[in-house]
Image (cartoon, rainbow over the protein chains, first blue to last red):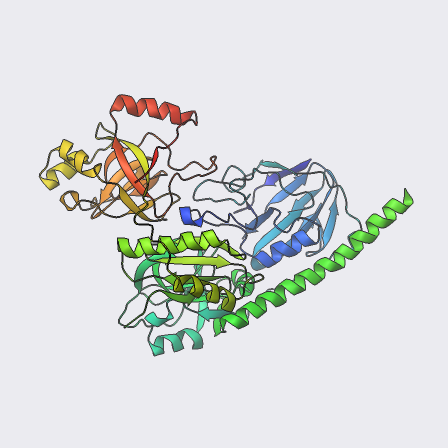
Length: 328
Length: 242
């Protein structure tokens, strides 16, 4: 009752919402890069909203199913095929025992996700199933997936009601410049007027040096003032934009260290992290300043959209349960 | 620039930073830890996680429960009223260390550099408890203050590729220990037989920022005995309130 990896893919890990509550001891949060894709995939399967999923990049895994279940594929497009036939993303898909799901090379976006009705049965370590590669913690033995690995499902869910209704419009990732909203600070007072203008008025290019820890961008140098580029080290939030002495931004992401000593000019708002992480070389990014109030309004709007989607399914779930009881 | 502390700095839509100063100083850190105790005591709904550092704390919160204005208001309220610094209530965690004995390959060099005997280095290093300003770099890596000037020793010219988990060392004016295997450029003077990083335990790290670490010298026989106890998962750290 689970999956066997005929091919592990290039960089496939088990991830969930992240390992919260241990940053003060120096543990990385980890967790999925694209929370939006993660939430939607679980939602379409009636999973708990923090159920662990597979995350992959560049070249995805090939899975063999040892039991019937329902899956959902979201995030970047890796040309998914079941038994050689293309399948839809952002749809709940019925799979049968013996089916083979093949994820290919990444066609658009950067990070792909597969969620499973019933969840992935890897141990809960310090409240999370996320793989922490630096500490060799969580996920499958604290490492990336390799050929021949097997993972069981937490529980057997062979099918789900209303399969045809379980879909949302797929998110498309283009090549065009992406607007990313930021709130300024905490160390925006370490930059000159000119430096702040450069940051907000220039386009920055996503480089090859991008991973789960952070994205390095290239573009015009952001000028510090006389206070310089180093601070007495302090905590780093997800989406923090560090600017070291070289003046180029580095955006800190899921596997970031908990504490750092570079100035942080601004912070990407949580809603926009999903579209940021799906960008790739040589895509361009432009930062737009918003107030903290605006960033929290954006957060509420996103939550409402997801809750609305959830309600659509709660209603269906209720009807399904009602009819099954009536039939009996 | 004239800045008044403490001050609140926005850090995205889900966190904010409260700064208590701009230098590494025991008094500032003690004030900060007192503030953290107070926030923890109040159990403010919506606050998710506190990440203390030398002189600031990053507060993660849920904007679905608390808006930025609301949390700022609550923090200002806490700051406006006097709260206890933690300086007079020390929580001291004892960490046994076997100095030298082939487990601390650089201890002779540290002694030579200081113009002291190895025994004197051990005595000085293990005499006073060290304040843990913060944990970071790797899980459980403590940034300790207060190393005696006499044993300050420059780092190695070229870092070692692999330090054993539990290595205790000196890097310039700092001392500390590596809870996990790691590369590192510090002068290694000893090794602790017990794990300071154990994800299977309820508290994976035996100490917190704001606590103190006291290194307790043990001989090689005791080192082996403690290592065996720890391997069975039965070692309990000695904690005293000073």
